[in-house]
Length: 296
Length: 124
Image 1 (cartoon, each protein chain N blue to C red):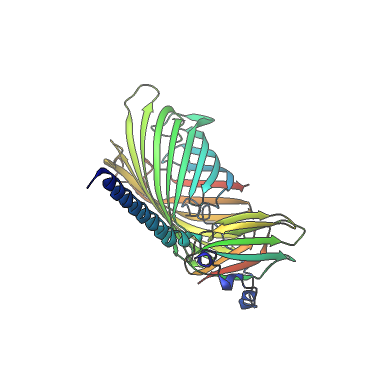
Image 2 (cartoon, chains in turn cyan, red):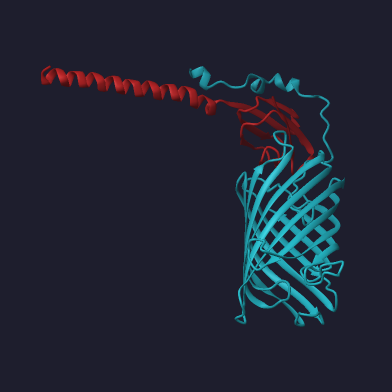
C-alpha cells in the first residue's frame, strides 16, 4: 500500500520522458490570449489567474438623440482580485459626465461628478480549453448610484446586472467568438420626491474578434437591447434597439491592455415613437467604450 | 446469564464494533485517499530562455506537482490560461506549481516575461 501511496508517474518522472518531447516544437507567435476585454462591449469568459490583481478604467458613452446635443458617459475606476481560480471580484467607483443641450424632455446640463459605487462577482463555470471548447462565466454586478448617467439628474438608483458570458476560439489563438445575455433590473428614487420607478433591460450581444498581429485584434459586434418599465420583471415593453460596430483590442504589454469599441444604432422601435426607424427615446444614436486595464 | 457474563459479552461486542469501524475507516482511507494522494511529479527547467523540455507528458485526471527551475539570471513568469497558473520564478530559483487533475489534451504554457519561450503539457 505504501508503494501505492507514493506512486509517481513513471513517464513524468523518468528523465527519458524528455526524449519523448517533440524535438520539432515551434513557438507560436500568437501565444494564448485572455478574452475578458477582447471583444468590446461583449465580455469574454476569462477572468485572469488565481491571485491576480488588476486596476482598470472604463468609460462607456452614449451620443445623440433626435434633436439637440446629447453626450453622456459613465466612468468606472475598478480594482479587481481573483481569490480562487474560478472567482473574480471587483469594486468600482463610478463617475458621470453629461453634456446635454436643447434635447426635448431633458434639462440642459453639463457636469462631471462622482456618481456611485459598484461591485462585480464573476464565476468561471467552464474554462475554455481541452476539456471544453466553450468557456462559460456568470457575472453579477450590483450598482448603487446617486447621479443618473443618462441625464445627470440626482436620484437614488439600485441596479443588479446579471450576465451569462460564453466564448470560443474558432481558430485557436486567432479568431474568437463571444456571446453575452444580460438582464438588469433597476429601482430608481428621484431626488425631488417623485414616484419610485422600476425598470429592467434585456440585452444580447455577439462579437467576433480576429488577431491581425499578436498584440492587436480587430472585431465586429452586434448588440440587441430591450427596455421595460412599470416593474423590474420585464413588465411593460417600451422599446428595443440594435447596435452594430467595430472593436479594437491592443495588448500594450504582457500586463496591460486597451479596448476601444463603437456601436451605431441601425434599427430600433419605441412604443412612444412608433413611426420612427430608430429608438432614440430609450437609447442613443451611438455608443462608445474605452477600457484600459493594468494587471499587477 | 450472570452480570459478569453480560459484561464480558458486551465487551466482546464493543470490541467487534470498534474493530468493524476501524476496518471500515481503513478501507475508506484505502479507497478514497489514494485518489487524492496520487500525484504526478514533473519538473522543467528554464535555461537560455527556453523551457527544457518544451513538452511535458502527464497522466490525465491526476493532480500534478510541477517544479519549475529557472537556471537563467533573469526572472521568468510561468503562465498558462488553460492550466489556470501564473507564477513568477526568480532568477536562479525555483517554484512548485500545483495543478488540478486535467482532462486529456494539450495545455500550452509560456514565460510571460519572454513570450517566445513556450511549451506544452500533454495530459493523456
